[in-house]
Amino acid sequence: MGIALSYVHAVYVTSVREWTADQGVLHPVPPDSTRHFLTATGGAQTGDQIVPTPVTHAARLSVAPMMDWTDARCRYLHRLISRETLLYTEMVTAPALVRGGALHLLEYHPEEHPVALQLGGSDPVELAQAAKLGAQAGYDEINLNCGCPSDRVQSGTFGAVLMKHPELVADCVAAMGEAVDVEVTVKCRIGVDDQDPEVVLPEFLTRIDAAGVKRVTIHARKAWLQGLSPKENRDVPPLDYDLVKRMKQQFPHLHISINGGIADLDTAEALLNSGLDGVMIGRAAYHQPWDILGTADARIFGVAGEQNAEDIVRQMLPFIEAHIEDGGKLHQVTRHMLGLFAGRPGARRWRQILSTGATRKGAGTDVVEEALGAVTTEQAA
Ligand SMILES: Cc1cc2nc3c(=O)[nH]c(=O)nc-3n(C[C@H](O)[C@H](O)[C@H](O)COP(=O)(O)O)c2cc1C
Figure (cartoon, rainbow, N blue to C red):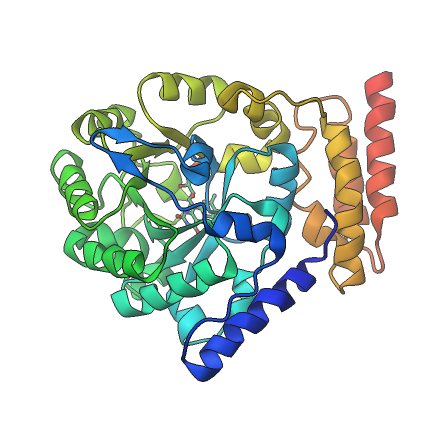
């Protein structure tokens, strides 16, 4: 704990740079704590039985990839709250890694495991190279984004538009799977635009299944590629959980996680009890991290935990100090912590003190301690 991100970054990014420099064999130098996970590849399968590996086990509950939100600081917080849940990075595009050399985008803390890297792209060769960089950096899973509808993403033939090109997706995931030992997974929608999800979703799953994918997360609504903003595309198209449940019946050998509109663990448990293998939660986990993740280890994974949200704040302090010592800003960490006390006494004061205090010049952990003091005072009142 408390190892600065930049330290980790320096260790493995140096190794990745060596590879990009000589275009030869990768020289992996992952931190010790990640090595174990490099061998923890997922998805061994016998007949219709999914044999759980550490990462498939964790996929019973995952926090969704969310651009600008699930950065390394956010994931560190989530990992403190839940030891077991699978975490996803923000989407990183393959061109940014392979052509742009933006290897800093692979930065993560060794405590984050199990952690999946989400890639965006549609060129099999480039995606294979990017997947290799991700696996080399120590990610436990490489996920292909086939669900993100934003304009920027569409222009590069990434994301949800790929629902229209299942054969290309199959080529991409096959190439990625050849390039890495860790599990390659897909996150998709049920369809886009005027596609009939009843037809296209099983076709899509058949293709990626044949290409070697064993685990898929389905955002249970369509994306409209024109006319709706990315935000509207997360709310307006209706959810169809039943279709996703039927896909599990039709593809029993695939590990299928459901995503979209899941706002509490009661719903997550009900979906798991309905036969689905995993549940992915996005916005609710971000806005109410304690509510969603605080009891996830006990409820979803059967692992007891005894900490509370206040403990999490205290455990964040050394991480925040290291972040600031490294030249980072307090608010870059605390912006992810605003919802920690959501719905509880003191939540408002907590948010107020953090929002105003954390952006001040030279702000440090004393702001967090002051906010925590206000919460404990209000809770005792
Ligand atoms: C701010 C934000 C950014 C997102 N970025 C991504 C992304 O990078 N990749 C992706 O596959 N989905 C992205 N999504 C979609 C989520 O992963 C998820 O599918 C969606 O929010 C529905 O789940 P929810 O209802 O639990 O939030 C993003 C969602 C939000 C709110």
